[in-house]
Image (tube, rainbow, N blue to C red):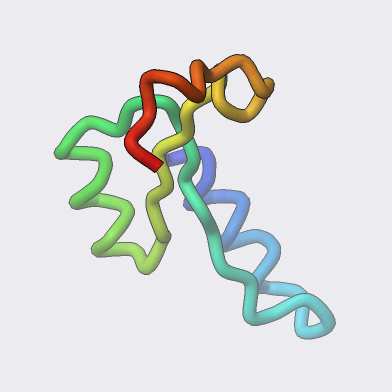
Length: 63
């Protein structure tokens, strides 16, 4: 979270790039990290890596 915040701060200094927004994407996001991200205006997204690889089991899903 701290590294992402530093990157965003650095990129937002450049008038040609600003405004830059961040997305914190991970398999699991701890509640403390989610609160910190939200306070800093960073969106949180949880990812299922197996589904992204196309390895999820379609039979075990409802939709």
